[in-house]
Amino acid sequence: MIRDAAAAVGVAWRAAPVLLLGHLAAGALAGTAPVAAAWFTKLVLDRLVAGQTDDLVWPALALAATGALTVVIVQGSQYLSGELERRVAVLTRDRLYTATGRMTGLAMLEQPAFQDRLRMAQAHSDSGPRLILESAVGGVQSLITLLGFLGSLAALSLVLAATVLVAAVPALVAEIQLSRRRATVLTALSPTERRQFFYADLMTSLDAAKEIRLLGLNALFRKRMLSEFAHANAERRRLDRREFGVQGLLGVLGALVAGAGLVWAILAAGRGLLTVGDVAVFLAAVAGTQASITAIASRLGTAHNALLLFAHFQEVTKAGPDLPCPPDPAPVPELSNGIELRDVWFRYSEDHPWALRGINLTIPFGQSLALVGPNGAGKSTLVKLLCRFYDPTRGSVSWDGVDLRDMPVEHLRARIGAVFQDFMSYELTATENIALGDVDGAHELQIGTAMKHRVHAAAQRAGVHDMLTGLPRGYDTMLSRLFQDEDDDTGVLLSGGQWQRVALARAFLRDQRDLLILDEPASGLDADAEAQIHARLAAHRAGRASVLISHRLGSVRDADQIAVLVNGRLEDIGTHSDLLGRDATYARLFRLQANGYAPA
Image 1 (cartoon, rainbow, N blue to C red):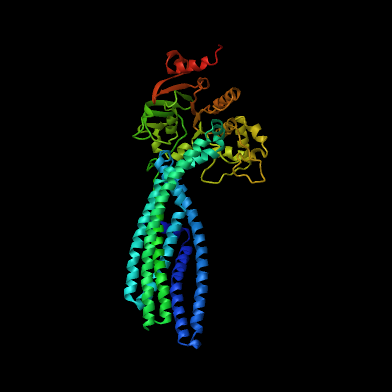
Image 2: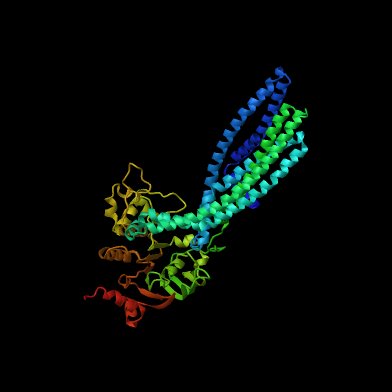
């Protein structure tokens, strides 16, 4: 907790040291103002009662100046707090997404527990440091006020000052316990809220709208969403009831102490032991002391809760790369021989079955290798290893004899082009959607004349140029309706096949790569378009190593080698003719598909 608190303050110091110091100074000044106002009030009252009207000017002016200064301090503190919060938010977001950028693999992102932690970090990366700092500043302010009023009470009655202070201990303990419970509940509810958001998103998602309406699923998902919502509300209700009971008991205790002190002060004033000004100071001191103690307890609880949640941000930002980085990385040469998998075994965790079992396979440079087999055979997993989204559990994958684990992953991927079956459709313009295929991610996307020519050429090869040219703003049309203005309806939603061509254009733009991976690159296209695309892809992959995945075996029959995967094992490899002659899995699958086109 201390380390996390120091980290939160360190974030604020790095973001804006002058603002942080100013905010702390404003809090300290604000803490002295109530005490000063109480004592100036005492002077005014005592001199009024004593008839010393000639000596009222300076304490009255001091009391007025204290009030005016308090207003200025409060407003200045609010401004400093807002500006500090904005600068801290920029820094924390930069750190958070820099940390996720270091996770170059997929292992952590595919873990539900890490997704929960990441969501908590996203939710509290901005508010965590702000709440911790506000609690610290507010705590300093309340502590100064408390010390001032305790000193005032001690000057009037040491016993009463000690009683008020002792009565504050239960409040401090209770607030810390409640804050721990709040953080525990928030963390425990993370999976519940994730499911709730999932169902809510389904009911408003355009991608899911057709199926949900056709199958009448809205009522089902609404009930599930409300069930998750009710569960979260029940947990929060229990927490609120606990807080209500605890805070109520503490309030009664504080009222009893204040009432007893008020009776004592009135009786002491009646006996002449206290002046009217003393009674005024006493009333202000009791109220101010209890308010300060309550504020300190609340601030401690808020800070404690914020620290527990800020720990998620700390865990994410401190997490190292999920793929090991070689201390002395080898350069990634232009591929000249090929890529080799040697006795590769892989599973996603110890609780999962083996996805790949003892794979030995070579992808020669300048040749194409097709991966075929039933669903779940390990084809997509093998591609993930080639892209080094994961490392093999056992065995190795080498690039011209160098293990991929010995190379900088970003340099390796710079030599790979790919079209994935689950390609991305970015909420950007058509030009940007294609230009993303070949950019330096460390810099802003630059689209000059040369890039535009390349984008158009890639779109022509993907057979999507004419369609994009015909859009309301041509290539500058936003392929989305999410970000358009109310008076701008030129955003366009593409069909699945059109999006697939845009994704292909993105791959065509990424030329001069040594390895090309094509995972169902034409699955959403009609037969004529599929034939055209495969012909263009065949020309595009010439002179490099390529891996093709398709369930349509007719589209991979011309590959130099076809590898058949079954249950994570390499069952067979050979040319189309070789595999047909062996009458095994490939031949059976090919005949099943061919029979679908045979005359009845």
